[in-house]
Image (cartoon, rainbow, N blue to C red; front, side, top):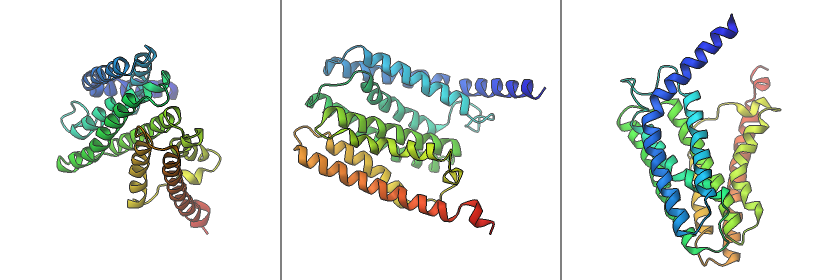
Length: 259
């Protein structure tokens, strides 16, 4: 009986998610497809880039459909709301960057590097816009904040892989993108790591800094020594930020609070 009820709730949740995201997801997906095709043509990438984008977009659609709150996101019950639409637009610019991982670009391709910098830079500008829109329209939600955060992490991961593929920086640069996911996985054996952290301007600044660092590393013609130094500085700042958060979570873990 409980299993049947859970299945009905899950099915209802998915229907709600599809109703909320279908139209906007289709429009944003077409935009992302055009961007990916443009990259493929101008940078002479193989067709795997298009396939990669389609796979990533369907994965995003599945996640949105299955995690959208049962009551929807907008007050009128239609669509994801203005702030989430901005975040979805940002996803349409970010997914083509992830698609490049499926079609590894040539090292030192200046044209592609400029495309990547332009797309990621525009996505970074939109990152500040969705929060402003949420506040101005009084449409901020926990779902929207999580969507925004996960998209930030995905873009940093994609950029860190591209920095490894397209520059003289070694594979260790991917630690910038993987650190956050390692932190999430570490919460399985150590549940206290999944505790709620207080809002932090330092954390937000370091997150933005990682995107800026990776974009600087991707600048065509940047000397290898400069690219490595910049990437190391970004990785160090990120590692210290995580260390501060881990220390705070350890001190406030449930066992301590109950003493």
